[in-house]
Length: 172
Image 1 (cartoon, rainbow, N blue to C red):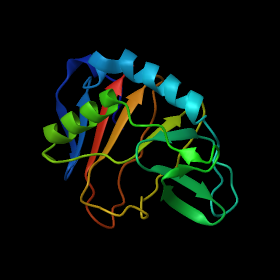
Image 2 (spheres, rainbow, N blue to C red):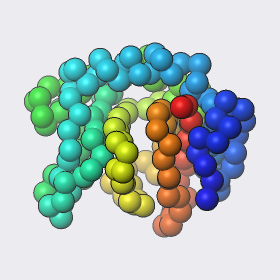
Image 3 (cartoon, rainbow, N blue to C red):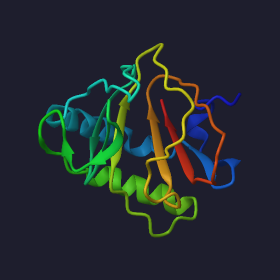
Image 4 (spheres, helix red, strand yellow):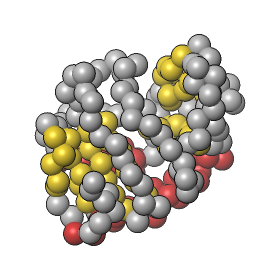
């Protein structure tokens, strides 16, 4: 098992699989700006605990920003342009998020990536998100850019039905 936060400031690209990388310390220079923006986003669209189609409440708190946000309820998983909690559009994706996602995608070979959604997950100690496949994605050729800030976490990785690009950043 790889420690996602081990030597996070050392930088560099670690290959996990085909089109899957860990970019250690990549977000470190902008970590404070990212966290400040998360706080602003949470004031507009608060963290919430979604319900799965099976009726279970997720232990991971989440919100979104960008043109689309990911939601879940008893009817299924979906992307929406409107926050179902506030009935308003999701907050605009901050420029720091856009620049970081585009820069990381570029580092991994995705030169023209423009994110349309940013899921913000809040993991408390002991929180779990099981291994899953993002089958509701429209474009399986677009990268998933994941930025981890804060407490150490164990990420499960694998079980692809189809190759999917992934990038992970680490900041503690």
